[in-house]
Length: 194
Length: 149
Image (cartoon, rainbow over all chains, first blue to last red; front, top):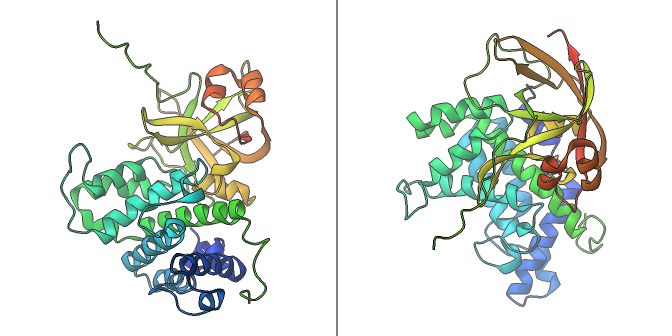
């Protein structure tokens, strides 16, 4: 099995240019919502930034703090994939056929870790954890599917490495596709790049 | 008059082989895992060589109307699965273990082959996988070779 640092380093989160490209796009997009000029995009425009969260995902994983690691992924995905509309729902290319399956999984993770008291079904929607378990059961990583078998007995098992690895893979996949479809590495503004 | 029944979609594709992906360095389980298969492949129509062959890489995907169904993996989905990401990076040692009804296991080493269009999926693999393949993205093919373990 790869170390956390190896797995992290293989994704866009471990690639400074890719992180900077997404970070810059999110900053500029958030500034547009508030009608701020491009100069603001170089400064702090929101409580979280892509660069900060990408680093946090790596650091929490290095420390074996898996639930915090997954939480950082959950915030990161919302910051990126909901930025276009400035709301809490995915928008733009995050909803197209390529990204939607990954983004849907990431939202299922978010609903579990960021809404921890939500444990009841709503209408015909199962509790967020049961929805996530069904997604985990369909994964191809044996450690993830084996954990999915234990989760129904104790939802706290979510705080284990296979979930962090799974979340990292999904945000890694969605981010790569996002970079490609938005052509962010081709059209970065020299003034905002490092 | 009752409404016409919705067309039922089977979760599997006719002729698919279901198994379990093994990451590099992991050992083959002594017995078939009790959870749902983590992988599946579909050999080409009329394939007779069971030791080395080209096939489609099938992945379990949630659909809005039919629950989880096996679909041919497209190039857009290669980052999202552990095995396809590893194969995309040319990591050696990714294997698919397939158990038969008698409990005997056969293990295949996998590597990525040239992707093909939906029309080629129909021609080489049949209409059912073609209908489940994405029309706008090339479909991934694998080459499997039987190994001892």
